[in-house]
Image 1 (cartoon, one colour):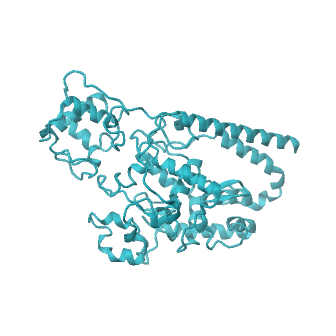
Image 2 (cartoon, chains in turn yellow, brown):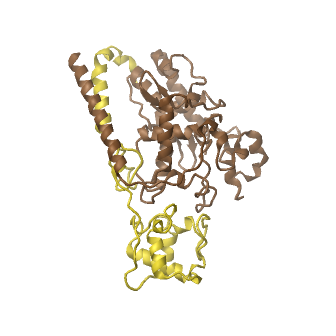
Image 3 (cartoon, helix red, strand yellow):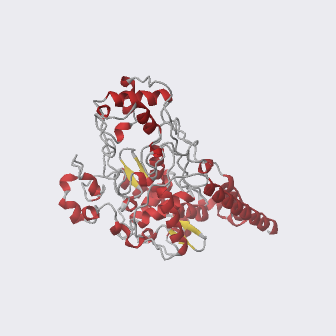
Length: 162
Length: 304
């Protein structure tokens, strides 16, 4: 708790100096420290202009072509699609054998029964913005949310969902 | 004295230049925005765009569907989490404790330095109704002020004490100040030009996509977005009416949190770097967000 009276006498003398110090602090003050062991997202665009991430550009939409054969593993793909710290596709989509799905995106539980090719599916998961600029789906490839192999595994899982 | 004045002027000039550069840099980088929803700021909470206002606008409306509260009914989100405000079980939760501790601090501090209470009360030795007008523009300080910023400012100016925004003590005092306006409708004054300008900046931030997931606030909290849909176990609700119950005791977190701390938590989920409580961008966002609660009564202490 404070002891305001102890400082009252010197307040008048100190005020201008401390105000200057406070102003100096505003000009180049350090940003928030990431919580102990917490994630650090400083490399991605943030709100406002007081932190360096305010000047980080959003990555522009990419139309990505699948190189070679898919070589994805459906079982691994399912784990990635369900994991909250990976694809977390379940947050918005109904998926084959997935518990507690979201409801915003299309139902993908029989995706593989459709006619979309591996290449098209890969491109959409990589960056849906190339198809729909207003999508709320994160650009999993462009923003490195998933690795190249993880993308291929998720596509294999979707294609195996029938 | 002359030297100090010169120093202060130089610092002010440097600050202005810095701000200018920051704005220019921000204008240059590529950003995406969620499609805009129609919001009429003059309507406040009643202008809710989710079609749910009729379910949470007052106690009678909430009582009509009390069976939805805490249930898995797909309509439960329409109560906008206002139902906990109705329940008076007589139990004391951490929100009450925070208000009590905030009050104790204010009383003790004001007994030593009466100026502290007068500063919080903006000239009156009374806090009743004060918080309902926040955030506001302070013409003397030439600054937009939130309740938390006022607490920090008054502690500094009158107690010579650092009670930084985001600190537990600041949040407790802010909760106490807010509780002194409990039941009163929020009245953010948009007729003040700096407040309206902040509203427009905050609105722009609300739609700006950030973070690794490339989400905006609006990605989850506008019609046609994820709002009202299941996001795994959660259903994002309308942003209207929300500011009225902050600072609030958050049971999933186990702490009393200010609105800025809640913003930070949301941004972390979007995988974006949170800002420091009190950051100008958060203040703008709070102005926008609180205008969406205009006319709705303050409910502090509260539990969510």
